[in-house]
Length: 284
Image 1: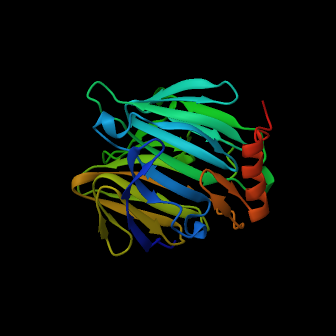
Image 2: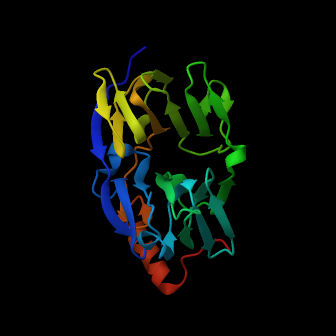
């Protein structure tokens, strides 16, 4: 059994997206897409000030990817070009497969205290599935399994498996694992991982000591691991909460501009031409 060690540490950086939403970008756009393959982008949009997020993400297109939104506080109301409408609230997940193309908007709102905390992860689709029909998987908090171990560690299973329990998001091409893990103070948590899969964790509270060297990582820090069979995070004196994400790399070329991700520049240009000409939507 080979323990995964750390290959890269990233600190989330402040930026603005949409109509002026303040958020922290963990990775995306500036990194080589191969680094986190099959994942493209991770945004952390935790804020306690409504004026920093209320303008939201107005109508915009997506093609060739999946967007995974996970809420901790507040809510996000969404609508799209196919007539879908809905709201996800604290603890909920929306797994949207843009596929051949969708135009949608996302409008955040705070809880009673004005707080809106959540994350959005982008996963790439392989060439064979780029033009599949769009679909939604809205998963409610109550439907996400939660396992608490004897040591007090709690694991919420959004996708993939943990100790024989499978999360509600299934049949995804990249074979993802998405866990929300809370580890008590000064407790080591070891997780078996699939060889060849990209594996990272993102600290969202407390302090974790990661990899063979016990490298410290605090809030809004991402730790990317190398290949291996297991990875370990040990909680500091204040405990640690983290998002654990893994997936099977696609190993394909990436042509990417904004919210559209294809395999070639020609496909990318065609997508934007179709958007301008009004022929972008392939499935009603």
